[in-house]
Length: 171
Image 1 (cartoon, helix red, strand yellow):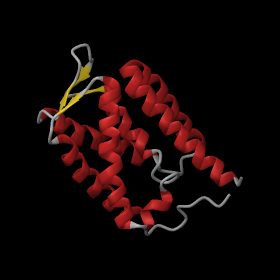
Image 2 (image 1 turned 120 degrees about the vertical axis):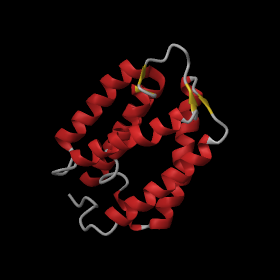
Image 3 (image 1 turned 45 degrees about the vertical axis):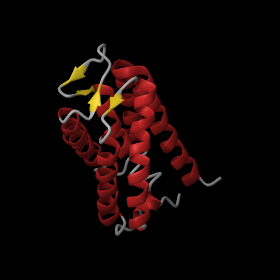
Image 4 (image 1 turned 30 degrees about the vertical axis):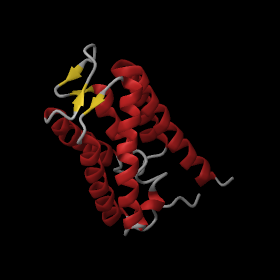
């Protein structure tokens, strides 16, 4: 396999490892594993300035999921440690997702409607699976709200990143 394929697979595996650690392990395990994945990404895979995307998505996660939590979209188990309206593990998923933008998902941004459809389906499915695995109860309206939010976000990403050249690795 070409080096670029291995790098994309490593990127995807790192995200999945972080997602599982956050959802199954909670905030402390999630912080250690997701922090390690993000640090490794920034050290070995990130492009110059890519840290801005990770920081931006961390802020976006506070706004989107924090707002949805304040609106009653999530009900966390009583033993969940919350930082503001969110547990740390849920918030960490946002910068983890950002590690995929210019690597494993780079191909997607050239296809705006596929990106929007992927966001509208994959986003809510991730929340549904994460809630089922972590004991979080979702409000009946939450998955529809997440579908709209992720479709809009992925469409915006497609417009922003899809026109950039050099998003696919050729090494």
